[in-house]
Length: 117
Image 1 (tube, rainbow, N blue to C red):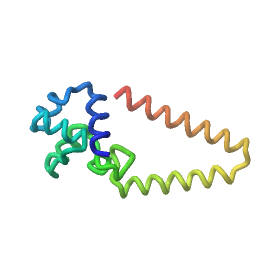
Image 2: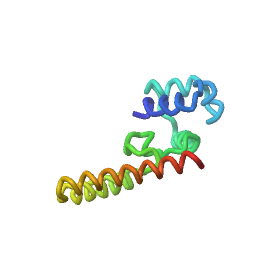
Image 3: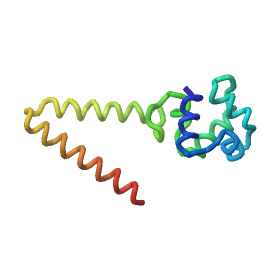
Image 4: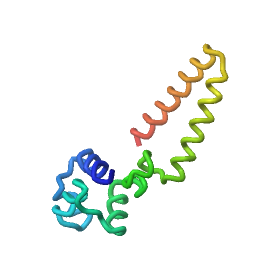
């Protein structure tokens, strides 16, 4: 999981393995090894990687599917989403559709505002 996520984050930032290696003070051979799964970074290096990409170590290790959340917070979010789904499912269909549209519009507004910052 670490290798796949590390490679995806690196590509998203348009970095070569060598460039990433320079940023986190390891060799490009080490980065290649992390991405292929043939090497595991020590805890200090793992934290450097997480800090550089602004994600949690739990995300890098596959214990969370949300980049900024720990495994514990990920479970809390899942519980909150489950609660929201229960509320929506209890609503009549027309009300549910209206509420879903409002929630999506609100979420999109938050995402747009974040992009503008």
